[in-house]
Length: 421
Image (cartoon, rainbow, N blue to C red; front, side, top):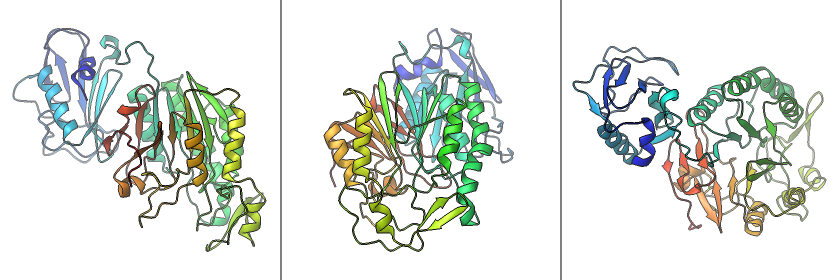
């Protein structure tokens, strides 16, 4: 968070005064831009001199209004800048978007400053920056889906990218091959339509994950035909000067759903892993796998699938970005709660050889918490896994031209480092 970024909160004038009254305030001189202050959840920034919630304020739902007590005296723009900088240094995430600043803490958007966009300077300079909001492993949580869209609109993102595990678990389990695509059609499609209405140029790139059944692929294709998403699995697409490729497959896991599991490397599968029950989707539900090794040997490995992706890239794009559900092995992005690293060797080899600009991953929810990092480096490649849990929103805000400024909605800003543990 820099003063240079904060200056976009006002359009013109030197040192305008902010005089907050209840939930609204006005810039009293130097600019015509109005400023609105509101809380987005039933939580405020403790110790913030800018927000004074009245003691009798009732709990609010997501997006509900808040009442703010009037400050004793006006606040200058310099004081506002100093306060937001202090919050940033204290571990809050301050995101500057078009005409607004939002402060996040523990995945809760707690303070929002929104100015009339008609009078605001653009914070994107010559408009050459490409902004991406990345999330993964939402597992059908509609509140998280909605929050991703809100963050993308607030930040002025060019694209939202989902890195797999889109759909919820359902009961009975055997009905999930039918209920998962229905979830996308009935619940996710209307959300996507509202995003597109609010921001028609927004691109939404998605891949499935290992907790999704293959039956969602036709549903994703339908959403793509309707102009709502782009299914990136096994495909390549352009976003401005950047080329995105996607792959959903992961190496074998102890879990039941095997539709998107593959051998990691090209050699034959090893000894069958222990698992409670191995199934794949069928037209009528799920089908038991009596022999996982035979199933894996009958499909291309992740290594071979990555070679196929390379074949789609007729040239050698300088700005290549991989969206691959499984992270590479032995990084800060593939650490289990036990400390074991279970990433893909094939994905790591592909990154080492191809050296894309950026790779976006998921799959291992707890990795950022265990490794204390959501980003790593393999050579020149920035590797990202934002993590996931059921309550909090794990987002990474990426400006593709300035990867060193990547910011996580919970963990803040972190420079990707060379692998070190």
